[in-house]
Amino acid sequence: MLQQEEPKQAAEYLRQVIPMLSKNNLAPTPINYSIFYSYLAGTSQALNDIIDRFISEKKPFTVLLMLELYEKFINGGAALEQQEKIQQSLEKIMSEASEEVQQVNNGAGEFDTAISKHAETLSTVNDPQTTALILKQIMEDTRNMVKGNQATQARMQETNAEIAKMKAELEAVKASAEKDALTGLKNRGAFDKNIDSVVYIQKAPDTTLIMLDIDHFKRVNDDFGHLVGDRVIRYVSALLTQIIGPDHHIARYGGEEFAVILTGVPIDEVKHLTEKTRVAMCNSKLQRKESGDTIGKVTISAGITTLKPDDSVDSFIDRADKALYEAKETGRNKFVIST
Image (cartoon, rainbow, N blue to C red; front, side):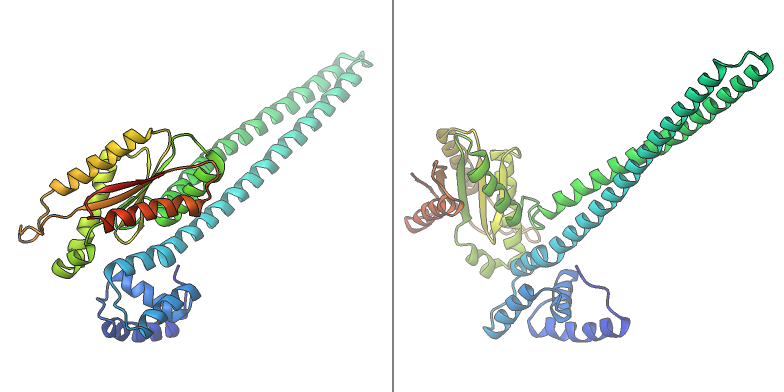
């Protein structure tokens, strides 16, 4: 999240950002600008360390890298800040609602005490005029009580509506914070949280992890450019969602690599879904959007493993990674199962 700077300081950052983008062969897009603005403002030491390393090692700032940096350090940070603000507002509203309920309880107690006193007085009074005055007071107290309750009920209805709205906003922010900007799939942070739950809490039977990678992806970027590379990544993500289904956890693990967590699915069905995805990708005829020229066959490789009772997150991922590596080393365009 970009901090609010003094106008003079912000202008100085602007003066420095544009030359830095140009020096590193980056277009002055909002994403690139935000990243280097944050870099100059020093909002994240981790971000600065990454950028400093790339500059010192003269590594290229690719489109994919910039998207990942933006998702991790800019967009994600904003989402977290939004979550905190909404949570604070919810807590404030809940506190006010609690005070309102307490006031109602106090008012009911006072009303009950007043009625008891009136009843006690009535039991000792024989004068009709005095009795009429007491009954009139009881009616007045009752009207005030009803009126107060109606006002409180209206305020509580407004409060409930506001709470419901904020809860919906909070869920929307959480969903956005877990979404990969390029593909719309779950991002790495969401994957890390989910697999931790799967391994240590859920421990569901027939739990499987698929690590999937686009073969020779660097060649796609080198031959056709990063925009085409991004479209290929989005195409694979769409295939995964279509074939494996949105009910399962499908995440962009990083770059051109994807991770899929399936629970309650027998290994034979996992193999079938993986093979179906592989075949669909192999048979796809991808073309450049602008010219219609083909970019050639693009294939995928995958590693599959099932969760063991004594697995840690690292061991679970490591087996799938090794199976993926074996698929790559033994010809690509295939999947390997690690037991």
